[in-house]
Length: 219
Image (cartoon, rainbow, N blue to C red; front, side):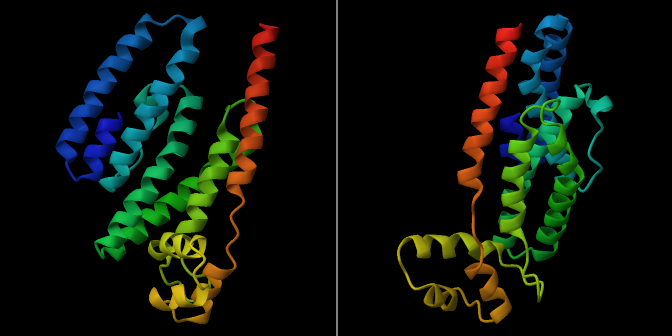
């Protein structure tokens, strides 16, 4: 599935579809062989399959396939869609670099809507395991990709360069000048952004590992 996503990013949709077909065939064989007690071991491959299929559908501006058509579990479907958001950000930035702003806007809209649709699953982290952590990571991806709140200007393509400059102890004002960020509203977006996701994620990971440990003890 990862080969399909790589091919899709490179624009080779024919190869991407071939890789997905091959992955689907392998997944179906394993699903038939797997008994109920071992279903949990199919979750990761199913997630990867959902991610690849969804990414290709969005790239072709088609409707995302349902979990029934993909024949995967509901949990795998949700987690696979969450993983797809990261690939959509990369696709959006690639379009910005190629100066294809209309397509970049479309990808961002899909990315944002997908996140907002899946956000309620944060409340059911014990049912859809790992959903909360993935949602927190995706929230960061969406926020970093967002346009200026005031003028709506796209600023995501310059955020990484700004961060690198700040980490190198450069003057933020000079960095923004070099990036040609002149509007006060856009400059505010860079200067007031505070990232906390890297500090928060380890706590969710520790809680998840503890939950897994408790469940294994109970079994």
